Image (cartoon, rainbow, N blue to C red):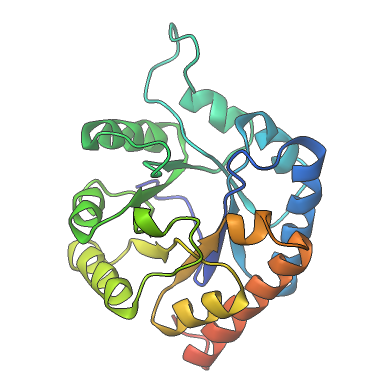
Length: 237
């Protein structure tokens, strides 16, 4: 766990995957950035590698993460994603073990260690309670609880999954915040997920495939703030 990294609940993650890049990605990132400041929220954005510097140099509030990286050292490794290069481009963190970029547990452990070494936060994706427990023992900064079968379906995880995954992780390390992902399609999904006790959630297709992605960013972040403030009227986590 990279100890110097700071992120506060409730937070959100927007993953463009390979839907968006270049100037259109920057335009969306600027909307996310303004909306994050409007509602005083931390928002992780995971652009294409080639857009990391573009976003990092042209936004203020969002947390720019790489979509993946490898654990190799500086030197040989054509086609690999070097941790030092990710850091130098302006990223503050890296996502690991997404369902579309699965890693072995050993690779996750080695990559977290390299991220810690170069000063990058880690957000690690996992499917089952058992996988989340295994990943929590590796001490990432954040975890994503995301049932693989629900990704991109518009169907969200139920209350039992949300509560069980948070409880399992916090029994191992209460400092690791758990983002509840998969199937978040609109503001109501965001609101309901936070009301179940989640500290964070996120979306890809719900925003990227929306008729108006900018309006959907507003809808989701507004409901994130609204649900959190209703759950924590005194401002406490």
